[in-house]
Figure 1 (cartoon, one colour):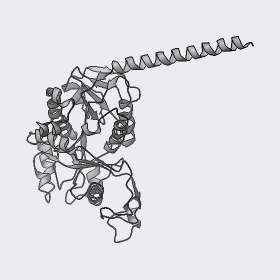
Figure 2 (spheres, helix red, strand yellow):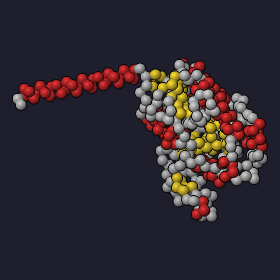
Figure 3 (cartoon, helix red, strand yellow):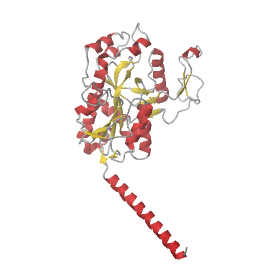
Figure 4 (tube, helix red, strand yellow):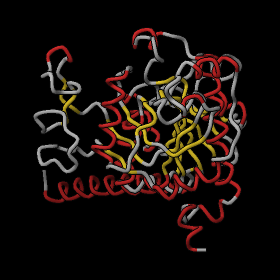
Length: 365
């Protein structure tokens, strides 16, 4: 083959390579330019059946009441995603930390949406500590703590002096010592949310009247030694513990309180137990690192469908298998009522909150 032919061959290859690269760059630029700006992402974790028209899980109220009528195929997620023309998108992650992690990452990488200015509202039901709140109540979190990353020894084999067999990674025994040099904190052990945003959300919702019922009132009366548990539903600030295991009982409730303070600090207060939030926050943190979302725009709201411990005279096994009062419906309603109050405030003042988060905006003005 002559040098001239070889040169022509390389020229053709180079031309085709540059043409493909230019075409890809143009396509990417067009794709990015046409991305739909999302203002609020509502994150629900489970659904009972259909998304409309039957007994609701955590997603149905949002789809029906906000008229999220645009249904988009979402193959990498648990189910399709739903939107309305006001810029609200709702996603169902699926239950458990692994499902939540995968679903949120898939949404964050979806080229159809611009999520850089979006506020994220994680809103779902939870177990509640009766020392702090009652059935149907709602808690805005400042901290999300992971309860899976640990050592565990069966409680029947632990030393008599130990309160439980759950040990921080890097430690030799359960500890309440803050800053324990033996304790190893992984990057997903604790997520400190934007406290100013959480407090702003709480200030908008603290006086809301939440759904109550005779069945919930009867269940509350069983908790005779817990004044907060006997109150009608209310809104509060309180932190949440995330674990894929659906744990229950007095000893594990003690551990949950200790664990949240151990990782989030002495001022933190465990109030709700969930099964997804550390997974969702893991994905959101990495998406923030990539410049695709803003981690300071994430809010976590958990509402109480059941207590984390049994009432006096009942065992943990009885309490764990007992049906939720009203099938947890008031807690699902509270997640929408409380959460949507904040969503509507963001939408109403989008010109202010698009570029500055609410807590910061109010301080500057």
